[in-house]
Amino acid sequence: MTWLITGGAGYIGAHVVRSMRGAGERVVALDDLSSGVTSRLPADVPLVEGSCADRALLDRVLERHDVTGVVHLAAKKQVGESVEKPLLYYRENVAGLTVLLEAVVAAGVRRFLFSSSAAVYGVPGGELVTEDTPCLPINPYGETKLAGEWLVRAAGRAHGLSTGCLRYFNVAGAAAPELSDTGAANVIPMFFERLTRGEAPRIFGDDYPTPDGTCVRDYVHVADLADAHLAVARVLAGWAGGDLTVNVGRGTGVSVRELADLVGEITGRHVEPVVEARRPGDAARAVASAERISRELGWTARRGVRDMVASAWEGWCLQHPEARTN
Image (cartoon, rainbow, N blue to C red; front, side, top):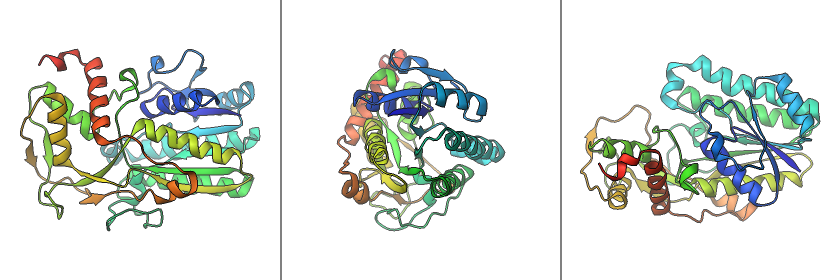
């Protein structure tokens, strides 16, 4: 098989490329390079620069590379930005997916793996979030991911595609420093950014009904997430129709304060965080049940939070050499 990986030069996409390529799969990457980095990709992986909304380009790529399956990761993904620019998010994440699926169906591609998000659940309750937890997204980003799942499954049923949707939780870490996240929109790089500037990390709310009062989250190493994509893709390759929707997480919660303490230990910068007001929409606890993916695919996260923070710090220091000396 040959897999087209959209967003293949991005933070998660490059890890998926590496995992699938390392397992012997043929891959080609499509990326508009709005946030992707070409140097993340192995030299033997073709990179096509362009958009998932460009139907003519998609038709050429699918035919030229004899693509038999698609892993779709390309998307806008900043929650705050989605609230400010909902039209942009629906255009990029839903309309772009529609064009991609039209091209896939026309080309006779029969496997489609959609990179979704735990944001589809909104503010879940309970100890663990299962795939049967109601999906009640609270921002346009989560809405577009849920609409994307609906669209993928509907296209699968109508056109005989084997489809998969991966709802993953908080992604962190790097398989190698050069593959690390270049943004600072997630909590670990946000901590790094503050510490590099000589400022205290920020915690939003310490009065939640949790053991230490701060939010509890499930963190998954990006390399484990990439391996989950590989596992699902291989299942889809053997199917003739049907859908698999799974959570990807560790099933273990870590509080924001615990994470801040670990960041201080690994970076050697023990700075007491400052506590600010809660952010609207933050759930007290959001931890995945990873039972289904373990039972059906035999996938289990192998790397812990310490690995995530340490590898993320190495990547941060590669991008910000001043971080080691400040």
